[in-house]
Amino acid sequence: MNSFQHIYDRKNTRSVKWDSMKTIYNLEDSSDILPMWIADMDFPAPPPVLKALHDRVEHSIFGYSFMCEDCRTAVINWQAKRNDWQIERDWLLFHQGIIPAIASIIETFTEKNDKIVVTPPVYPSFFQLAEHQDREVLYSPLIVQDGQYTIDFEDFEEKLQNAALFILCNPHNPGGRVWTPEELTEIIRLCSKHDVLIISDEIHGDLMMGESRHTPLAKIAGTESDRVFTCMAPTKTFNLAGIQVAMIVATDKEKRAKLEKHALAHGSGMLNAFAPAALTAAYNDSELWLEEMLTIISDNIDFAIRELQKKVPGLRVMEPQSTYLLWIDYSELGLTEDEVMEQLLFTGKVALEPGSKYGSAGLGYLRLNAACPRATLSEGIDRIAFALTNNDDT
Image (cartoon, rainbow, N blue to C red):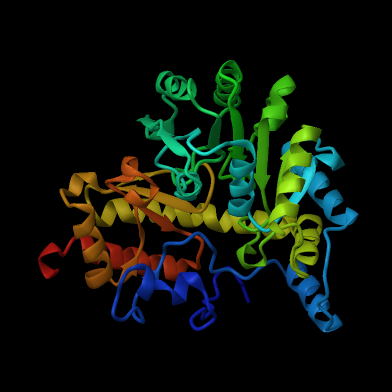
């Protein structure tokens, strides 16, 4: 059985993606809605990870656990092999997830009313975390050139002048852009010039499409690496979001000590009993699974772009260089976001994410998750096409 094409029933499994749509989309009934929104896959985890978790369950005792030296070695070896990035053992801090990790960095290294720069449209937790901690968010919108997002460095530097922190999505979510070494070098130069710390969220760094190659920001930061906090995890790569394990790479000893103190102050230093088993099995034994999965995703993306643009004249899809997400421009259809979402949910019976979730720069876009069996993706595209080409039915 091809696990990437088998359709698994995820309903009634406490799945946010499948079981929370009624609340998320304010629906009376979501039982007939096909979810293509939140970024987890409808693929089972790699067999080595499943075996490691089964073995852990069969042991039957789930006491307090810690991230062992083998866990550190697995992360270090993975980054060396995949990204030619040599991480020192002491640089690694483990955390319950990327979002809690980013929150801890914001709270530790900025003060209330400090300014934090983001580049929308971008993953909403970046600006939401800052706002919830009473920081001021400065938006430097990305611009589209030749069908891809790029940074407006003139505006970006203007925003940096009064900022304490910049949060980079590397690679970019939702656009799927893989930043070039030249762009990353300019980010480092400008942040150094204005003495701004950088969080580089690299959770999508293993999900490269085609010939794209991920460049860890800290790898090329040179003497400025101490201003960079790299946040990464195996969870997006291997569909382990529910396991909740992530890493912060911080090269500066004093900054690591402050983060460790923050963890102690918030009681957030210990991970669950399944995290060590899942992480080591993923990084040590699941690379072949990843390569097969990336082939499936790449084929899905090509299929989805072709079919969406053929079946819905006026749609334009930004071809992702990374991630399994599609960023769909519907602005030529002449519909408001409310109208598009209503037609998708009530006519097409399909749930996508509205672009405004990623900031006002996302208006006119939808985000679609293509990490599913081809039959599911094909059905979803048919539902989208039916919804957006039958406007009178709403």
